[in-house]
Length: 194
Picture (cartoon, one colour):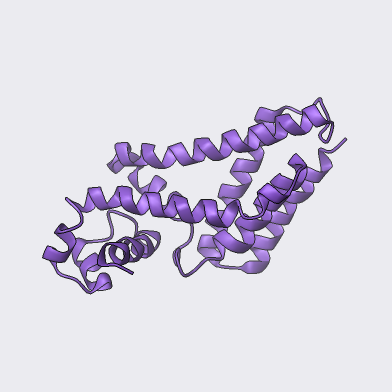
């Protein structure tokens, strides 16, 4: 791992635990075992680093949450696999995200303090909602889902449920509680089938 990659990875862990504003440059230097010169050789500022960390967090999110979705043909199966991956591979990833979902931590923290950074995180939330909506619409087209379901409303329910499960798991770290939350969403998706 190069110094730049180490700074990004260690900063991602710190942001997950302490947020962007709560993480000082000194925290980053200590975690990466580098100097200010080592840092500034790779990043113009802490805010510049933020974008690299966000890209890495998105890459990890895609790798963990989308794993195996291409092997599933039906939209219902894809949504269920996404929810299972979210529970088992993403939220339980204490190596990359020891403080829980970094996107929630940062979006809540930065919304008022640094809205331009918060907007970058919101793009990912919009992308997730669009993916869920697309799968629901496809499921209606293929007859897997009842044609009368409101895809927009179901998207909001699933999205809110995923965020809620993230927040609760971030607070109590209870695998049992997380299992119950995600299983409830899976049962809800299955109840929408024709």
